[in-house]
Structure formats: structure tokens, C-alpha cells
Length: 387
Image (cartoon, rainbow, N blue to C red; front, side, top):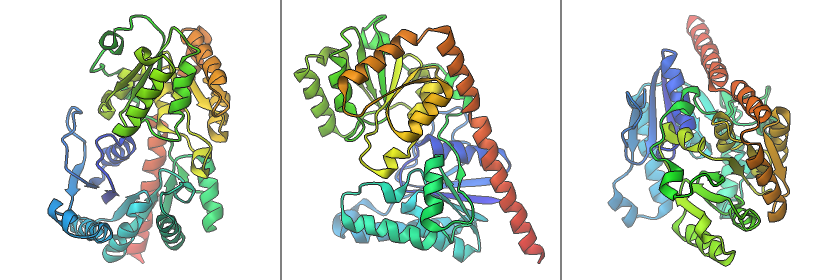
């Protein structure tokens, strides 16, 4: 089948989109990914493994016309590009691409797959207008999608209730590709940061508000031997705020900011840590039901997990015995949990639990679910053509 995925951003650091596209291409489908932005070449041997098309109206247009009109122009450009691929399946990643994907699917008589990486209606958007638009788009189009995919059981259950779906959406967890844990690191973090054998605490992914970054810096004061690495960048103004906060807590020399690395090199960096943190704050329904990518990346790299006490994360951590939770906004409790993770990093029992969890939470298992879904779509399309 011709599969066209539509994404509202560049996929350079979007490992989920890349994994899914490669899996479907490996299963024999012709896969095209249409993204917003420039087509940056992959650093992965052999390239992306699928066709990548970049769509972006001329930069001059963005300066001359209002933002809303520019977004409409981009949507039309996506629709034109997607139609040219003559898709059998249109696979929309996230709510921003659901409406254009629906239009393409109807124009091309294609199957529509909605793949939401979050609970879109549970995100605290900056404007009420955007919140209302997201709710309207999902209310109108989720039930019109032929298949729905999401990232956690909690979000799947919520989507089924919200839109009275006949069946639960397919859950594809954000687990990394199995082989990525064994790749060589671009840098030796300890050597570059000159920290020797000191405990290394990792916050993976962009530093941002509502991700516990400030509590993490405050907790570092209670961990006098440890160093903290923010791996993945973030908004410059917020990074400056964190650096200033580290100075206020007298831990600036032990807080380090490292830019994002390509998805295929990430786990080789991750495994250099002694503890991995994921500290989403419970300020919205999406966070409460989330299972962030970084949790599975820590597990794949054999690194114990420390999380805020959120229901989906707590259930995962306790089920596999791979880490600890701490109350949100309590730096001392967070420091105690991190200290325990550092102590248990080389413990044989913890190592064994992480290895077992990595097998259970593997891309080979999730990949099979995606391929089976597309096999059912292919059979359905064949049956429709025969009638």
C-alpha cells in the first residue's frame, strides 16, 4: 500500500514518526512522510528508510500575511503534496494534521489513521481559541477516522469515552528501536563535562515549564556529589532562567546543558547516566495520563527511572520495579528518590529488572501491533474492492 504520513514539524528528533515509518516500509509498504520544514538528511546509515517530503510556503509569505492565513496556506500545501503521493492510507500525526489528512483521505478515497501522541484536549493551550479549535476538530473527525492510535492505556480509555468509540484505540508506546541502545555515543559525557566518576543525573528531552526542571535543580543541592545534565536543549530564555536558578542554589558548577543529539545516537548517551528523571507536573489531564518517551529510553539504556507521582507512570514503574516516584514539587523527596536510584544503578537485581522491562517494553512488540493494524487495513481495502 501507499502510506502517506503527515507531520506538523521536522522529524529529525521525532523518533516515533521515524520508527513507525521505517516499520511500515520494512513490512513492504511504500511510505512517504510529509513534514513542515526543511528536509534535513538523516545521519542514520542508509538514511531514513522512507521517502521524506518537506513542505513550507515561501518564508516571505510568512512576513507578508497574518499567521492564521499562513497556517491555512501551509495546510493547503500539505494537502497538495499528499494528494500527489496517491495514498491508500493517510496517517495523521497529532491533531494539527488531522483536518488536512481527512481532506486528503476523502479526495483520494483512502483510509484515515489518526495517531495522537498526547491527549490533545487535555493540553493547556496558550489561547482559548486554540483549545476550542482542537476540541472541535477531534469531535468532528476522530469518529470519522478508520483507526486511532495513541501512546498510553490511560489516553486510549479517555479517547474512547470522549468520542464514544466502538473500540479502544491501539496503544503504541514510545519505546525506542531495539538496536539503538547499542550505538556508539557521539560524545563521552563524563569526559566532556570533566566529571570523572561522579553520579550523573539525566533530564532527557527539551527543558521546559511544567517538566519539573526547577525542582530538579533544587533537589541537586541535597545531592552534593551529583551532576545534572539537561540533554536536549530548550527555549533559550528558559535555559537562562535555569542557569540563574542553579546559581541561586549554589549548584551552577554541577548543572550542564547539552544540545539534542540525533534520535539514532540518543540511547548511547542515555546509558552514561546513573539516574534518569521524568518530572511532568500534574497540571493537566494530558500529563496525568502520559508515558513520556524518555521513560522507555532510560529503560532501554539500563538506567533506573525517577518520576513524579502520576498514575500511568507510577503503574509502569511499580509493575516492572524499575525506579521510584516522588511527590511533585518536593525537592527533598525527589533528592531521596534520585539518591536511591544512584545507589541501585549497579545492583544486580535492578539490572535484571531493567533488562526484563526492556524486553517487555520493546519496539519489536510494538512494531508488530502496527504492522498487524496495517494488515487489517489492507485486507479491508481488498474486501471493499471485491464488492
